[in-house]
Length: 318
Image 1: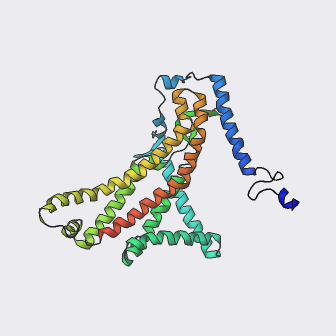
Image 2: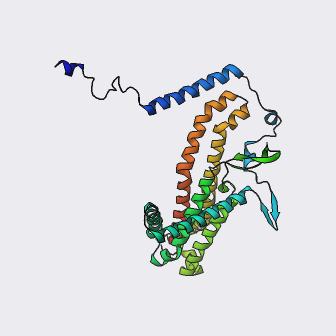
């Protein structure tokens, strides 16, 4: 009886165990964060200390997205946007070649992961395309997904590509490190979207004929004078697919990178307060993780599945 009375209530931590390691680490980080804010306020106060470049207007948060030409190879201007595309192509081809070799040797966890990816991308094609279109366009849809995913993911790895800001290393001027994604240059998603637009228009014309394809854009059951109103809207909406594919990928990646930069310190630089930089730093880290873990894959998935939907819709009859 006395032993039962002395036992602690169920669910409460015992004195021997105390606080978990994870909770201790979290509280320690919060303490360091709050303490850092206090220290910066004590040292620098609330008075703004703007850098000369900010006061003169030389510094701009959008400068990191400028494409400074490093050198030219004929008509091609080589810049960080081109570099990121080349890295993406090399990683995508290398990854596919590596997987193809490994699958011939022996099955394992890699093969399970590849089969999951295959079923996932195959499902996008199967749900939106008929059998003939699946065989024809499944490789393209899967490649688009991988290519955009790789491009997005390497956009969150800091690389020395900011030629506008340099630092000295053994006497050499080295570009500053920054995160940059090829998608933040509107030309990249525009070219991808234009390719998709040409493909589904070609398939629609091939399947229905030129006049039939234009007629197929009209929803079924629409008759009478309202046709004169609905038909131009449907034609316009077909061309707006090009815009929506481009802007969705470009705007999401650009906004995400700008938010990371702002919360990671640029806003503090603009207002000239060190404590603001420290205060917003955890939010910058949180946005970085959110973008790298979720948005990178989500935008690749959306672009790929819309490609399948538009291709399938082009050969359907309303």
